[in-house]
Length: 255
Image 1 (tube, rainbow, N blue to C red):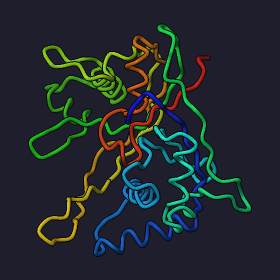
Image 2: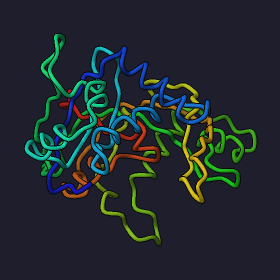
Image 3: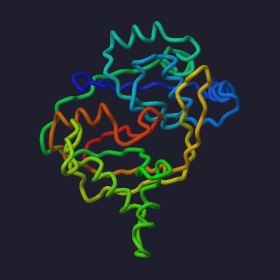
């Protein structure tokens, strides 16, 4: 996603229709496993096609879904008009008896250097291993030779390293955007199975692969180092599985 234009989208998905969508999504894939992030990914694609907003975060039935998008008000209005009607209704894009439909507001792409902001981010802190992705904490435990480790410390360090340019490697446009302050902490954790699907090939249907791993919520404060890189970071998101409900940086005033 380009950071030259960034907007924050809020929708209020219909809980009943969303549950039905998840069930249909599950059935369409030949009774293969499904998870909410996988289903929401498909729902956003059904509504918006290749310009589906991401990263996104589904908070809960009451708070709804948030997403960053490069689409401005006119472009989003056109996409909503063209959206699959059931997908649009499920996402709550139109007004109904409970709300007035989606809301969209411009989001800053210029930030003062040194500005301190509160943040929270839902992550899959994993590392690449021989058999696929591996929980960063379990990987660290294996490397520690019995030394005690705290899950929180490992995940916070994982985030610091992810956001920092790697020595000897080309710097990504979003790296070096921020410094994490010392109050960053693990605010929530669970192990969760997610489903990722292969691409259809040779006439074969897409197949789901179950991946077990961490689902971590980190909160704290950050300091902006590079305004342009920070805008890129917001638009891109953090870590893997960004199109499935992970990696969206939610910001708040420092306090």
